[in-house]
Amino acid sequence: MSAASPSSSAVDVPLLPRDFALDRAFAETGHGVRPARAGTRVLNAGSLDGLESEPCRIVPDGKSSIGVYLIDGCLYAVRNQCPHKGAPLCRGQLGSTYRPVGAGAEPFEEVLCNRVLRCPWHGWEFDVVSGKGLYDAQGRVRTYPVRLNSNREIEIFI
Amino acid sequence: MGIFDCDIHVYPSDSCPLESFVPDKLRLAVELGMDTQPWNGYRNPHGVNRRDVECDNAADLARLHLDPAGVIRGVLQPQPGLYLSMIQNVDVANAMARVWNDWQAENYLAQDARLLGSACLNMADPVAAAHEIRRIAANPQFVQVVVPGEAAFLYGHRFYDPVFAACEECGLVFALHPGVEGALSSSTPVGRPSTYLEWHSTLSLTYQAHVASMVCEGLFERFPRLRVMLVEGGIAWLPHLLWRLDKNFKALRHTVPRLRRLPSEYVFDHVWFTSQPIEEPADARDFLSLLGMVRAEERLCFSSDFPHWDFDDPGNVFPSSVSVAWREKIFRRNAEGLYGQRPAALPLPPNPQTPSAG
Image (cartoon, rainbow over all chains, first blue to last red; front, side):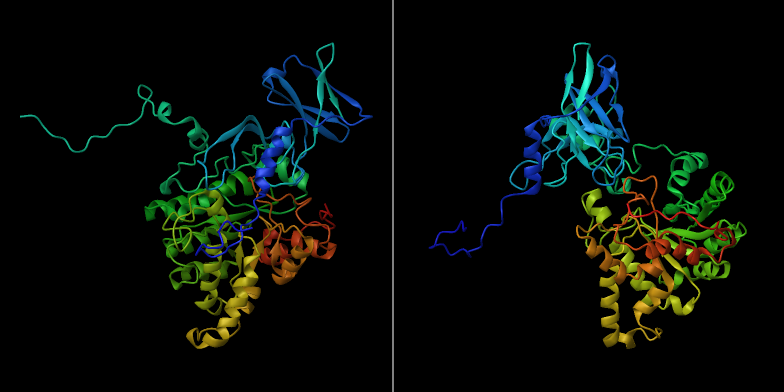
């Protein structure tokens, strides 16, 4: 537990836990899109054509809706509801953020370029690719696997 | 001979831009305005408004907020007019108070009977501010005056007595609203925070100082009918402050001989609080305890802060464990009681909808 050797004159202070919530949150952004579960239904989100010029396509799904993003040639789908207070999350801005680095490194390491979704209400950040919330260890928004069918139509697996 | 000039100014321009010298990793910080300086104030890097609404007039306000949220009365907080006490030219500030109040009356109060006004004042000239209060009081839709948390003096100071006298006389609530803390000195007693996050999260320091001042200076003895509303300051700090005031009062009462009651008694008779930004403890039981400690059933009035980034949606602002009876009071009855001295705040239509558990 202690970094100090027995002969050291330093006070024997135990290290605090090194498992930091925000480190875990950012690590999860590397996990990519979660796979579809068995027995999923398919929601057609329309043609791929035109999506390049749309910041986000909101696709109704019953009482809720899903936001579809085209980022660096890949498709992503995010539930259009912030887990905090139910805001229309996909009406938020897409951008980047700074990685939490602690005291031992230089600050201002810009990461997750063009995949950080910022809730339009309270500003909470989410990674569009993994759905991970970038504010604590647990938070996340639901994401869905997406594929393009032979007609160049977007299919969301719900 | 040749001249040695010791003061020549240069500026970045289109022909010699600064941007190319900003390292990549700092680009986002500069874009977000994190290089703000004291005279710019503390800026939210993402702006202070919700990104999913654009509210430019009374019709927008009705369509985007009043109608969908079921708001039957809404108290306006004009910005940046509520900070006009900071205008350095006193005569201009006095004139701008009239400008802001007439603008609010014509563009909002006259457009929608549900809207109630907060008059902007120049607190740097309390006599002129009192004159403005008596002028706007002729419009029954003005229910309060609003001043910023930042001030030249703590608000218990008798320098401001003309304002309090006019509020009492006209039945107007004296409201504080945060913003521009640090404009005159520092937003904390020990120096300037570095970030908007730090600044915004410690704004309650200013409110604590004003509440202690109002009580200990004997403001509510001088103006026994004065009612104060603390807007957007949170509530969790209040029990801490009142417990300390009451405890210290027992030993130090003789230093404030104008007081005839415990400090907390003055506060719970004269001061109300708006709910937003409501504290959000992880355990809902803590929230209920907090509501009890601040006597929320009497003193707390719902506020949304629409359309700001940290607004509270009435549909899900409180945990489901908050009772229907308390919701009735917090969402409506407490504010009716507070503002009810002004004719436009009453009467209200019967059987309104109270947002249920969300």
